[in-house]
Length: 123
Length: 193
Ligand SMILES: Nc1ncnc2c1ncn2[C@@H]1O[C@H](COP(=O)(O)OP(=O)(O)OP(=O)(O)O)[C@@H](O)[C@H]1O
Ligand SMILES: [Mg+2]
Figure 1 (tube, rainbow over the protein chains, first blue to last red):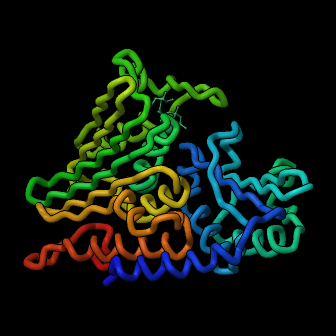
Figure 2: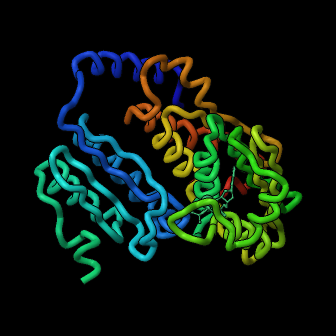
């Protein structure tokens, strides 16, 4: 059974990490469209896949957030990734299966997965 | 929407958009009464009676990127299709409660789906807001409340990966625990039921 004592232990470990972690100038922001159109198209598992992948790789500089409808409902689930000093990249029709590659290629190595971008999908 | 848990996530997003600091989600299953009741209650900005009347109209929205609001009409449709209905109670400046009822055995009732996934996604996305999730099954119930978890966590945020994982596992275990021991039937969101 999950106990509150366990949660306390998690808290103590997290506190130790917080002190060594410090601030991040190279912060990466991942946002998932979570309006009705996004949710209906499958945004929830995509969001959870990003959170899991980021946690698995211990990418402390990455935050995963949400946004509303950006008016391109036909391309939902939509994911936008912002990296410092680079233009925002918008992915469309994202599935949980595509997430590992986007994180590995784009978030970690800085090379957007062009074939998954909205620009490519519109061609 | 393919599962009711996605409607719940979507309706809770309205609460977030309305500036709610506390959103309460209740999932109630009663097999004897053959009923499921889903409630999303918030302390957001609320709506006037006039606004409440309008949100039943699928062409009403306060959003600016697209002209139609779909969330509430879709939820209403899912409930009415399954022999139930949807009601909205709202007080400007106080908050809103959206309640949908379903005939549990109705052939057109959508499955509940991954309601734990919905609650965990909401907490992960909004670590500075509070959520209370209440799961009831035939008179047995449990609740998880981020205000109580925060008391234990102190300055450690709710979206810390290990914390979110703990909440996820905790909700799943607690849901299984309210399974009535006497009957073979259990809450729909427990694997094996
Ligand atoms: N909990 C709430 N508190 C305050 N206002 C609400 C709440 N829920 C809905 N509303 C109002 O009702 C409108 C319609 O909601 P609905 O979910 O149907 O559409 P939407 O959120 O505008 O767009 P969509 O859900 O399609 O992305 C909202 O724009 C908002 O003004
Ligand atoms: Mg909505």
